Length: 189
Image (cartoon, rainbow, N blue to C red; front, side, top):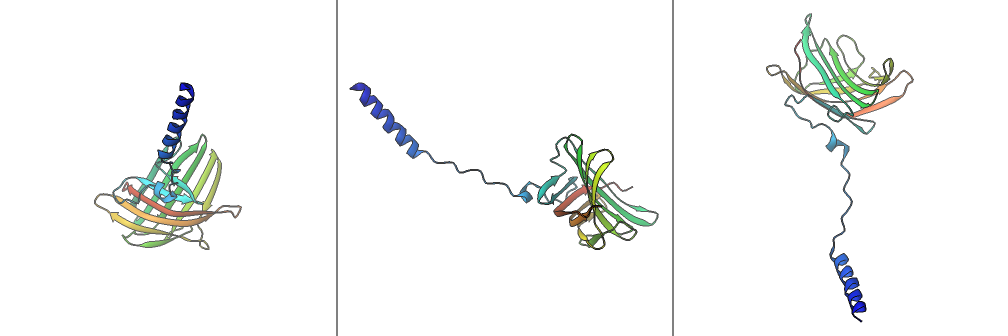
């Protein structure tokens, strides 16, 4: 009789405990934009964007990440070069590059990203699988993007901005780069 009573108490206790427990809801997925490098203007040396909806950050690479940058006057012409690089797997690298040739940048300015040439701004996205085996997607005059300068501090060498573009490779495949942002402490060569 004590065994049955103990069993009943045990079962009732389990039922009461399970009824009083809150079900945990599954964690909500983070939006891609919340995972990107923040859109700061402090010289944080970050580059982030969405590549066909997937996250590209120089701060979340598999092995390493780098930002190479400069903004300087060269023979009377201003040039800007920014390359955000990350290694995502052994021997697989991604690079987003923005550059201007013979353009003086101004805070608040929006520049079309077209083809690489004097007087233009351009952009590219590169996936390198092994040295010499690159798949490069370029902006073109027919498929321009935009580069907006949100901060240009020539005293503290801080350059920040946003960008978006569609790049096209040699086979005609298009890659969509959206929600791009960068915040660098540039080198004035």
